[in-house]
Length: 131
Image (cartoon, rainbow, N blue to C red; front, top):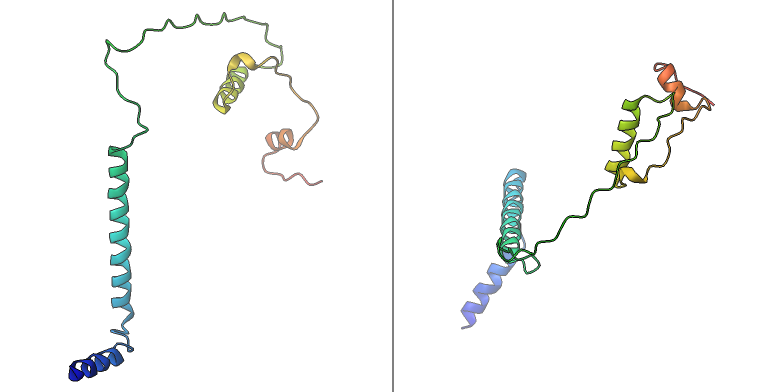
């Protein structure tokens, strides 16, 4: 019994030294560990998607409630200001719609003529405006 304890202590003394000092072997071990962890995380995420309790349950066509769609809001065509082309109005409306607002929330579009840096950059694209 005492011999086993002495042998164990000798083995533990040898463990203080690193197994390898080769940086490529250390790199491969670390990359392998990281790869295994990432793959296991991807499988865990797939498993969570499969057993997701918050996923809405699928209903068949017979069970689906039939709700009448609200009638579309009437489109009121207002006169467009003389200085702004229709294409620019359409682009502005699309940008506002992409931002999350409905096109019906746009009440007016007014050009601003204050010789701003934006206007200067369009007029003189290769010059910097210094103030």
